[in-house]
Length: 368
Image (cartoon, rainbow, N blue to C red; front, side, top):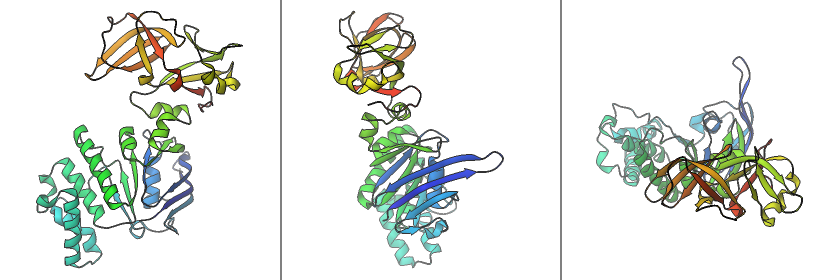
């Protein structure tokens, strides 16, 4: 096992116009920690992982594995194992041969290879498939073989590049549990890349949210959800996504949030408005998660309500998603099953302002 440290790493592609794919990323992955890099396509997460692996050159900065700077160390000498989205199994070899092939290249004895292969197979539930060829396996079984091939090497660091993207939804859930269990058993450093926030939230001890080559926030899953540093993180983490409404903070005495267009406004309790004093009169964005929006019967005197048009209802049995339009803003509510009026009707939405977030409309940074 080993610590992985990135200091100001950059990746610049110079074919034609210069393109900065990864810009000054700093990251300290502790020994035995499970860190997930997450973000939209093209954010630089896979490029960052490939620089750690040695599959991409580093334009600037340093990568350390343990106490050793590995910028110029070839991949095979970095003592890492990588699991890709593509299983990359040898089709003519059995599962047993695929698992032990890397060890064979190291000239390890047949006895030692067999021992490691059996341990990996038992760990991943592959004992009965050792003599099968990859074409005789399901997608999930093939991915377990790819994991096993990494396990037998007993590396200092495991690197995963979207390993579950080719699996169906049910199999992804199963493999997430498998990878989480492996981390608990092996207690080895793991760095995992995905665009799926569910994978990130369920697997990572810490999560690195990236966008356009930059790190937006590094934090625990719960802090990313409850205390996003900026609007990008707030909108990316959470499903359904956080609701956003542009507007201003107004009022000489009690403050109120006035939505863009002036079509609705809500009074802010003092404990919510106090940190927003510097933002008074400026363009801001209020964010609130769907579970913190509810539907109330009739027009209430409660300060945190807005009238909206009911556009769509998704009933999922144990919960209901309500999609409504309040002035210029689309609002999603996540509520318990309930009777609702016909689509197109007027409804009243209530906001739990204790859970609201406020961001600068220009920079996107959190206020307060």
